[in-house]
Amino acid sequence: MSKGIYSAPRGTKDTLPEESALWHHIEALFRKVAETFGYKEIRTPTFEEAGLFTRSIGEDTDIVNKEMYIFQDRGGRTLALRPEGTASVVRAYIEHGLYVTQPFSKFYYIASLFRYERPQAGRFREHHQMGVEAVGSKSPYLDAEVIYLAYHFLDLVGIKEKELYLNSVGCPICRPSYIEKLREFLLPRKQELCEDCRRRLEVNPLRVLDCKKESCKAVTEEAPPIYTFLCDDCASHFAKLKELLGELGVSFELAPNLVRGLDYYTKTAFEIVSRKLGAQNSVCGGGRYDGLVEQLGGPPTPAVGMGIGLERILLSLGEDVPQIGQGLDVFLAFQEERLRDRAFILLRELRGKGIKADMDYQGKSLKSQLRQANRLQARHTLILKSDGSAVLRDMREGSQREISLEEAIKELIK
Image 1 (cartoon, rainbow, N blue to C red):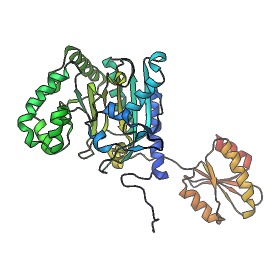
Image 2 (image 1 turned 90 degrees about the vertical axis):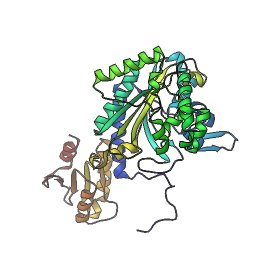
Image 3 (image 1 turned 45 degrees about the vertical axis):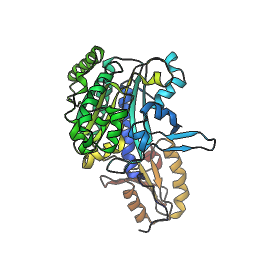
Image 4 (image 1 turned 45 degrees about the horizontal axis):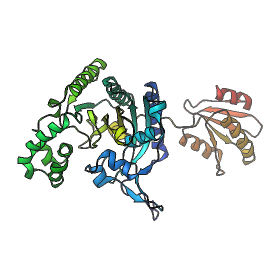
């Protein structure tokens, strides 16, 4: 098949109708689960002021340094395509004064995100994420709820082979002492680190733990675990969270080097990974960010959230992708060309009653129309006959019978 002169940009992809049906299924399932848990949808702009992300995510993170799409608009403003969902939700929470009218808020979103990174399996420069944010409470019960929501949703989608990794990254009270201890541990091993991590060692040693290069991972495997340095508040919060997950029947594994790739996390950090993926095996990630609202200009407000990658879900499902029916309820066929007008008007009536219906627009023979009905996965085919009657064919059973149009419409509605 010949190609045109243009193609989708590297790191992006088209989603054709067959796959779109599966996306709709997954998104609808996520909406249902999120709303069952009391979350309401929020939609934020695709691009924001770049400073929102450099300030919230952290200037020394890979997202800001290497991956964020930044551009100037015609007004000279520096903008960025949204690289993650939390900062935009927090910005909206502050901008619209929800800390006054709705001090405790539960949001969910489904959004496109953009990061300039090396394209690989399940990771695209434009990718799609579903997430929730619970803003206004420091309760570990919310941390457990957010994790359980993600775990429950992935169960419903069909991802059974998964593991939850859990850590606490402390808070501004206890984290500084850990960072100094970590720096002391890493300095004698500096030459074993990659060039980026040698720089991080000076400005933000915690980021070294997030490095995915094997040489750095080999060094940090022996690093002291951060959860042994927690203050009383962080330690009790972490202990309660682990207790609650146990009560919910969610198993987990402690991951002392899990700090996520964002600077705003406090206390809880977690990832859910799929055993069916390779090195980039995270399907879901999130945590608590108690200082972000204040950092972006709002009042001190605790919060917790998570995001799930839609493309990662599809990759994790592999051959277990559910077959989503996207066929028609009825295909209208006709014996003679003069019946086309009659079929077209009947389409309007059927569609007006919520029946998924279509017909031939290319002047095909009746035999070709029936083949088209099969291709479109029509449940029924209604064949208009020249004598004014009709034949209703059940395409799954292969049976058919003569019927009046009035009776056919009533039956199709039923």
